[in-house]
Length: 226
Image 1 (cartoon, rainbow, N blue to C red):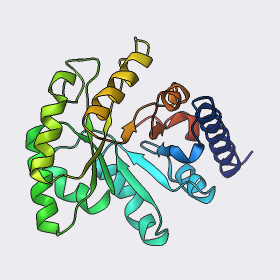
Image 2 (cartoon, rainbow, N blue to C red):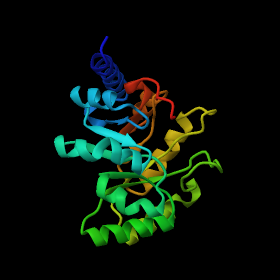
Image 3 (cartoon, rainbow, N blue to C red):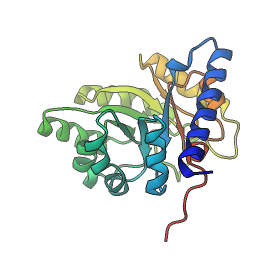
């Protein structure tokens, strides 16, 4: 089996599961954006996903994303790129130049840098606020109790916040975390919910996800870094 055939098959399976989960929830597959997480993937697998029609991708690091996408974006104009990993403030300018969506706005200093970068560039990028639903000290994201105030602060700065993102603890059921994120989004008038990864994206779709972030489900196991 060729890499192109393998990745195309994975994509077909993931899309089918999204459609089935959406139907169970009284939604349609068009309600959900599949963000294929291409971090640490070899170029041939990324090329195979693009060839199979996937157009929305997620990356964790700005530098790696530049290596994967800077040239490819000039060749395939309808690609949409999401930053789904932590963003260092010294990488904001590069991130704004490359990504269409920043899913990990998680602290006032970063929000301020993004607002200044948008002003300087005369444009903006869509933003999601990352919420640390499990209140894990080692994980990025604003605490649930502080989310409303932080969303309001981002809006005061002019950031185009359209949704929330979370990564639930690996050792807990995901449903309560997805439900919590949905409640916070609803009371802040936010329609976007980025939640669900390879192990739990079907559950996320059933609980209202508008974006699911699937890496191994699309590409297979990530390659070890040298």
